[in-house]
Image 1 (tube, rainbow, N blue to C red):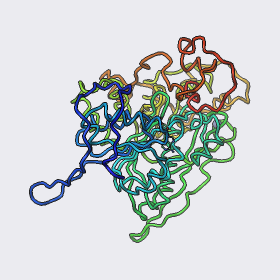
Image 2: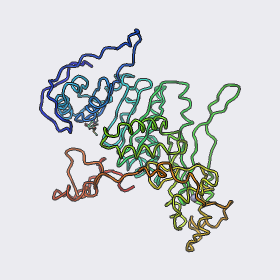
Image 3: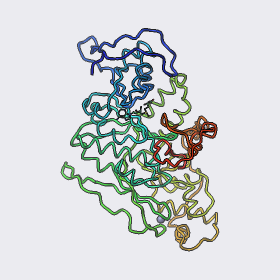
Image 4: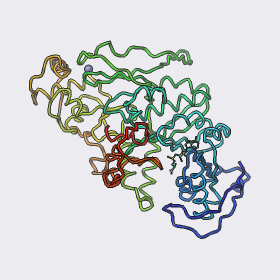
Length: 490
Ligand SMILES: C[S@@+](CC[C@H](N)C(=O)[O-])C[C@H]1O[C@@H](n2cnc3c(N)ncnc32)[C@H](O)[C@@H]1O
Ligand SMILES: [Zn+2]
């Protein structure tokens, strides 16, 4: 694409940035720099903001990221591209020299620019699924794909069949559904990457507010790609007691310095749950390998702390990254203590007491950034239920019908005596230091607003608040609004 076709005529568009007065000059190609010894240095990273709307994000890359190279902003909506071009002009010479805007279908652009961008950012309305195939091809080797999804109702099991058609995975309704959503998106990106002998390495995977966002590096290697089935699993979730078990898709056998790739052994569960006797739903496949690069997260957290004053959202970002930095990296999904107690109809031990019992039984346990009540552990489900059986012995429950999952679980004697004495590691480091790990929403009715131009109806009160709806009520039954499918109900 030519670099000199930036339109700079137009007036001010709404952007929070301070206007700059410099005239808009046309960008010259950035020359390759040398380090004085004739060796080539790294070129400034090129960014593709594939779905840029008014260009807010593209402009922030250009103006706020030190050392950034060219930023290409795409949109297939004419008004958005015009707004983007006005915003480039409004943001002065740095923006004009770095950001270029094109009216085009992002999919076509990415397909015709293979391995060209160090960073590809996908920020769609709803699902990114239709952009993934082209996006994975447009990233350079070792480059980063950043991808948002806001169709949480689909990804969290509201419409399993829709999720399957979009992402190739079946979601399960469970307390861990938001983490499952992250893992479904990662599995989907991996599957698209594999078609081109490429694979992903997740760097950071975040669920916040009403959306998920993943940051993955993309590499090309036909041999490394063979490991993909080892990183994917189906999930069996009991319909009675919510116990869950992972079924890895592939396995390897090493012999005489060579590795054979084989299908996973299965099934990992019998037809009926060994804890409560009910059947299992099967979901997935999900990405069951680590979803963050913890070294990277720790280093970003340190950078963030050293530049605290530069980030207005410092408290929020550091809370999320702190919780992520303490997540058990090798444990997919998590338990909910409240859920366990709801199954048994018992009072809940405190998180510290429960965590202590797990640690005292010889297992690891951590929190999760996805849910303040979620607990990740490598303790098998039968150990978890034994701990709960011991808890109930000293905190008895009212008698329940004998066919209830809770009654079936409690009818068995525990195989060991749980020790609830407080374990040193029962508080996370952040909890021990009283560092905030979860913050409340910044305002009431926090969540995605409606797509521009949509009619506000009574069903939007829960999303926008009565003030926003205020008099413009129209009682209709339009269920096709993706932005309205937010996760408030989960
Ligand atoms: C959620 S908005 C992007 C918001 C933007 N990233 C920001 O941070 O302000 C999604 C944009 O994608 C655009 N879009 C949808 N399908 C597209 C396609 N196939 N090619 C290019 N743009 C597309 C829409 O016009 C819309 O402006
Ligand atoms: Zn069960």
